[in-house]
Image (cartoon, rainbow, N blue to C red; front, side, top):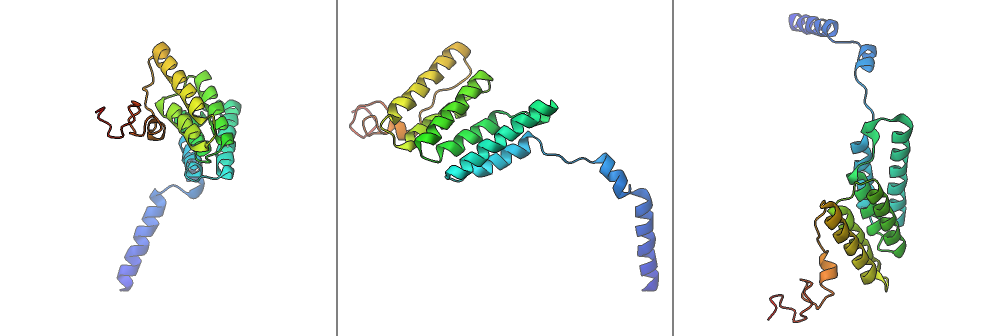
Length: 185
């Protein structure tokens, strides 16, 4: 048994000689957060429906933007996922403030040319959930923006959340025939 113990110590010593020291590893391996790290945390906030979570998601996106601007590090540049997660966080608050903040995020995304169909759908969803008397009209305005962008840029698909389609005649398909069976008969 003593021979086995000595043999194990020999392997450990040999391993230590071959392995870099902790100080060497510190200079080789750098672990730093990147846009994916921040986006994952933002997404975690977007999974709740509180105003505080949406504000925290927004603040984290702003911190990421400032970090990118101050360092020039492209690994810290917010992307469409970062922005869409913040829009989703605002949409889940089911409030007029949330819908307005979602629109503000969409405005920034359009200016930076990083908007996608998910962005528009999330903002439409924000209006659908907030319960305002203007929700339908505001959601349709976003749909029109999406259609206009699709005509001018050709980079988005048009999808309407089920909540909006179900208010057009009760059949959920948005064709407005109102008979509820969805087949137009």
